[in-house]
Image (tube, rainbow, N blue to C red; front, side, top):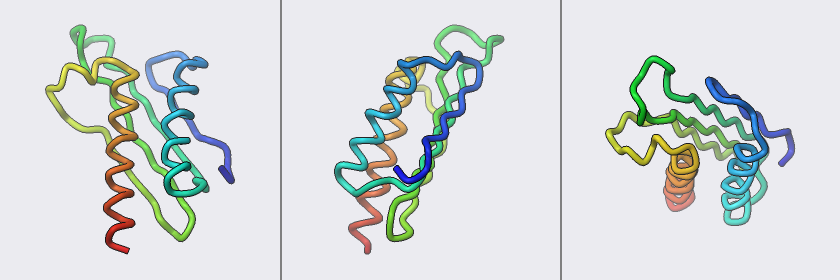
Length: 107
């Protein structure tokens, strides 16, 4: 990647696990579509005042060569699996891959 990964965490501690999870998902995109020029990932933990099982909010912005850019915001969903950090991060990157596939099919 041309610029360093920007990883912003709200309500949870930075850890090697979170960084590795993001790096792994980003590398899948880079293998298929070329090196990312920039990537910003924001992860928000459920509010401490909410009940157990609230979802993580993950948003991803990836800039790729040829002026391609992917923006994935967090989704509002009743999917209980989004309460798992790993699942929420994988889901956001999976949606980013789908956006990129659509973008490349159009262009």
